Amino acid sequence: MAYKLSKSGKDCSVCGGEFETGAEFFSAIFEVEAEWDRKDYCLTCWGRGHENAFSHWRSKMRPPEEKRVAFEVDRVLGLFDRVSEGDSESRDRLRYLLALMLVRKRVFKFVGTSSGEEEGIRVFCPEREQEYPVRDPGLDAEEIEKARNELGALLDLDL
Ligand SMILES: [Zn+2]
Image (cartoon, rainbow, N blue to C red; front, side, top):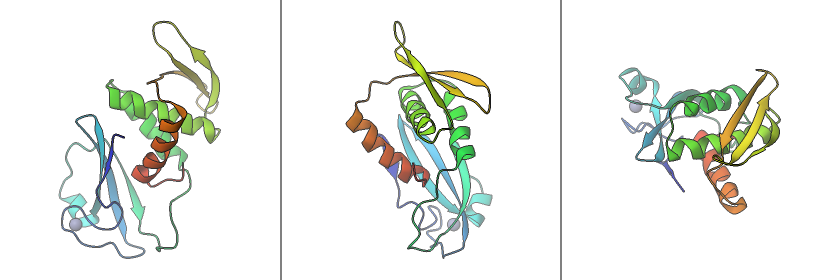
């Protein structure tokens, strides 16, 4: 689907320097022509500038035997907020997937579906006491499962 990964989480996309275990680095995602691209940066290259990053986070290189970080609620919620600004097909799609992941992790509660002009779901965040309508981009179960894996890789999270 619409995600691109450029050898994520191993080396710097600018200088090519490899991240050693324990090294800190930044990861950023970019919206490029309705796709999501992920790039990683060493601290030096990040400090030199990173244009148009849609969202970014700082991580530490884990030993190879350790895979993904568990779910980081703040990061996923932050991305959900960010992706809620403005609309495009890629944002709608990502927003829907993030909402599903947040329901799955019990950060959001599933309220119901809405039909009519805009088909979608409604979710509620107890912590924020806020309900969100989320447009359904019309993905089937198989597509959602595939997207979940890709999104996990994009965000380096166990979704
Ligand atoms: Zn670098």
